[in-house]
Image 1 (cartoon, rainbow, N blue to C red):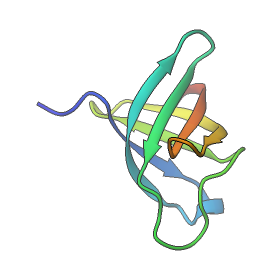
Image 2 (image 1 turned 45 degrees about the vertical axis):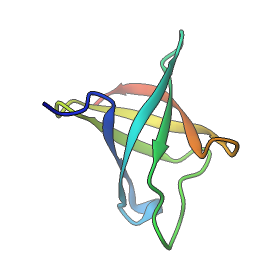
Image 3 (image 1 turned 180 degrees about the vertical axis):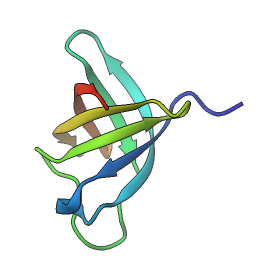
Image 4 (image 1 turned 30 degrees about the vertical axis):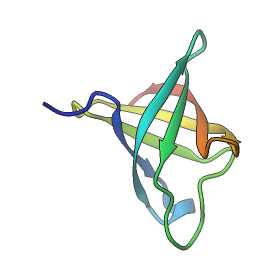
Length: 85
């Protein structure tokens, strides 16, 4: 059985088409917000506010998200759901 918190964030060409593994750390109430911990790329562009991605869930489901905030105290990203892919 796979970990239901596991995700892969697929970013567009602004981040070189990077696919970053990570996990959902919190679902934040209303409004479609998640906190996600991602393994950042070793070099090159980093996800930042406004970066759009497609989150692939553990079961293969895909949803479009945008990064709204980097949480430096926890190395997590706050993301908002844009819609289903």
